Length: 360
Image (cartoon, rainbow, N blue to C red):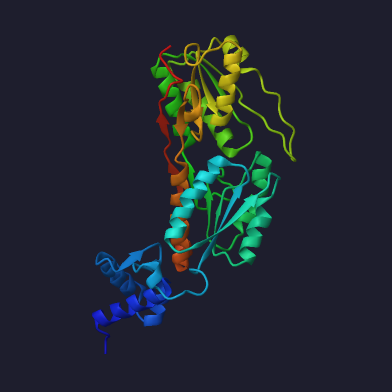
C-alpha cells in the first residue's frame, strides 16, 4: 500500500529536524521513494515555512537550541583552492562560500603559495581528505605555468570548476566547467567611457603576471585598434613583481609614456597599482583628472583613492557564487556526468564612474 502523503512528509520533517540538515538523495533512500517525490514534498514543506532548501540539501526551520545535538558535519566537503595574497580572488571565495554554507556543504580552504605548480599538491591533499568537488583559481603567472597544469587537471575524477580562469580553445581544459568575468567587455566599457568624454589618445598599463592581465591587454589592444575615434594608443606595464619563478621587469615611468604619446587618459590594471601610479603622476606634475583621466580595472580599493578612481568592476563575488552553484549541481547529480554539457560561463563587469575622469 502506498504511504499517505501527509505521513511521508511528517517523516521527512522528523528526519531533517533530528539532524538539522539532510541531503535529498539520502532522504529518498531512507524513505524508499524517488528523488523526484522527495523534491516535490520538500517544495511543499518549504512553501509552508517548515523547511528551508539548499542545493540538494534540506534544513530545519527550528531554532538551533530546539534541535538535538548533531554528530559530525553536514556531509559533503568541497575544496576551494586560491592563491595567497590575492584580494581579487578572495572576493570570489567569499561569494562561493555563501552558496556552499547555505547548502550545508563544508568548505575546505587551501591557499596555494606563489610558486609554479603549487595548486596540484593542494588539490591532491584535498581529494585524499575526501573532498567531493573542487573550486579552483590557479595563479598561472605565465602561459608556460598554465599549460603545465592542463594534463593533471583534465584527469581529475571529481567535479571541478575553474573560477576566473578561461583556458584557450582547443586546450586540454577546453571541456572543463569554468565561470569567468568577460574582461573583453570590461575593456570595452573603459575605452568607450574615455572616448565618450572626448579622449582620443590613450595609454593602457596592465600587469603581466596573470591570465586576467594577459586577456585584458589583448582586449584593450583589439578594441582601441579597431575604434574609429582612437587616434593613438600605447601599452606599458603597470607593475611587475618578481618571485621564486621570475625576475621583475623594469616598469617605464607612466608620466613619460603619457607625454610621449600626447595621451590625455589611461586605463590602469589593477587598481592597487592604479592608486600608486596616480600618486607617482602627481609627483611628476600630472594631475588627475585635470591633465589625465584614469580608469582603474578591478575595483577592489579604487574608490578609496584621492581622487576616488573611476573603475571597471568584474563581478568577483558573483563569479564565486555561480561557480559554487554549478559545482553543487555536478555533485548532486553525478549520474548525469557526460549527459550534461560543459559550461563556460561569462559574467559581465560594470563601470563605476567616480572623480578620476572628466571631459578632455
